[in-house]
Length: 491
Image (cartoon, rainbow, N blue to C red; front, side, top):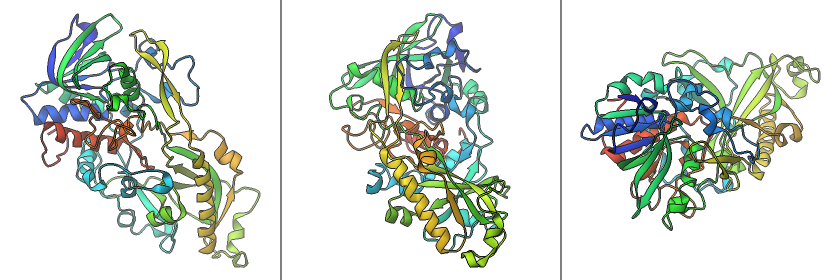
């Protein structure tokens, strides 16, 4: 059942089994899965927005504080409506690579507290939720026969191919609205902003729900799941710190820290064999897109991050004509050559000084406004330059091409392109000293409080986060509702 609280003088329920706060991909997946798995439970899904894009007045809560540093576009990258940020998702989908879950000392990453294999079965189910027609991401298997349109990297110790798949993209609020409306033991509340928690004896007892028309009421539940988004998760929990049990994830120095986003750079143009095609293409299993990546061994040996590289054909620059590549005397293979813009998405190193903070200012519902002090780690630029050096050597030694590098000040020192992937501010780990949630996404030291979404990522990779968000939500549903073999859709 979908209920707009603006039409109600009081809450339809005062108590439930599970309360999910936030109806984006994580929240909707969790609520529907738990309701189907446990028909004896009453599930409430509380969404702060409605079913349409918020007006400026409705979106006032997302306005940054007046003392926000202005280093990150806070308002433009969040959506306050049913379906959350799936409403501006481009559909790009792939799992995190296995190496992201492992310790990587050169990135100052301890890895994830769960192995890659723990998410593998859930990635298949997540693909169904995201309406992706297949689950294979082996680039070599799915790009067989595309050799003439892809850079030959078979003999490269540095480069390999990775594969993206595409969701339509799934707008979770629209796609699963019928299920939200018809599931008998689920109530989806709209215009239901969570403004505070009541904690005691190591657990959450109630959540306060409010809306701009004046409603303020409390809902009791056995389990609470915060699934508000990568910025809002930290904002909401930081506002509860006065009640934080000592030694808990709410009191953790990691709460609000390690905020990350993928970094987009344009560091060079490349002279490479002609007719390379790194665009989206049809495949019998559904649309796919190849990108260049780094071999795990090369990452280890050269101290490089997980990243993707894409080539986009451009008009010939004046510096070096493409016919240069046809002259074998210059050390290339004498083929037809084109110029390409090199686009890089670089995994950032988790940075404790990159933070979600609260202001003394409050919004109309009394919740502290947010400040986002987004900071690249000092070594991100260094790794970007090292990546370009490695690429120059690799292409040159294999006689494949040349790079025309942009000056570092142009490529890396200027603010990089933000990708709007909010990650890391309630990170997962083993101890509350350096993390907020445990391997089951439960807040350390709080018996019945969980967090869902990309804010729990302790390391980021380069893959778009939505598929992993949904996979983690399905894993959490197994933990809360009783483990079963992961299934697809809402059944």
